[in-house]
Length: 365
Image (tube, rainbow, N blue to C red; front, side, top):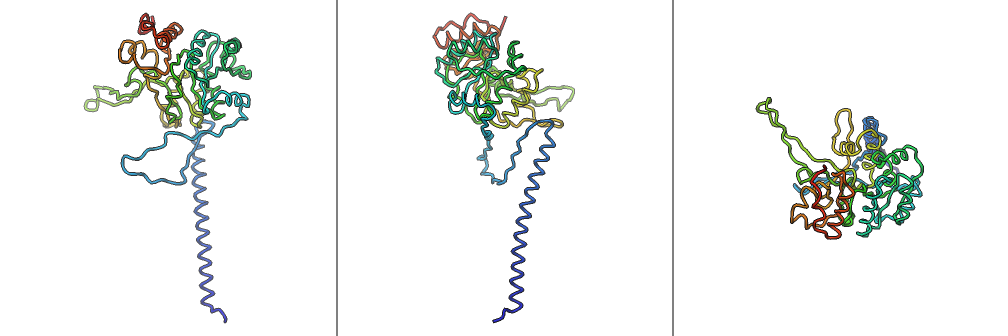
């Protein structure tokens, strides 16, 4: 039996249709790749001098759920740990950290007395995962004498000079970078802090940065609507603005994510500015012409659990109900007479001396 010309023609048409479908599918995939490459190229061109940006392209769009049920992601994915960055630190953290988390304090000999109160309060609460990064040799020896976990960095002229001269604000963000690259969450701590509970039991871990506040009440700590009045504008005299007191860069938890590392990099590149100001500007300012903002998620800690010394001395010690609450930490950041106030905090909250806080003024004199 001989195939008819019509059958052969039909098969050829079907074959051509199949090939066309394959070509169309391949073309669609190539177009998708081109779009993604263009997006990445555009992002790179808008980098504004930043050394690294993370572009997240959703390849599988999702449907929105019913009204009132939609919740976006607050957390960025962690980085892939890279032990080659610092094998010696990686080995030490593997021994000390709990759940890939650690408290880190950078300090020098100028605050040795406060450091002792700091680590004794940590020992009292039985927090095992903490580490001191000394900025001078005397603190290395002091930590060894007191059986304090210590990480002695490799020599670095820039860091060592600043550390020995009495400052650590300009270098701590640079040093913390390696911890995050190794895949560890860090609770950065100044040493003018008294620990009363384990802070890791009170973290939410739903943001890149979780920081205590310099605010002294709910409005200043968590934000409020501040109305600006300009009478000359007549009907439009009132303009609504948002105000919030700053995150405290002396006590914050930071997750090992790309936005977190970008934040550290950006603050570390501003050595002539106050680190807390740059820290807050990067977390708060949106992208605008000439500036690409940082897209890090952030959370405020509870001001009555993670308490600054203004809250304690101006409000809490005078309120019978607030005095009963158990704190997680007290940060003596508002007062220059740090050491005696730290000892008074220990006397009051640890040793139960009810009048231990009474002798101090609300502010400084």
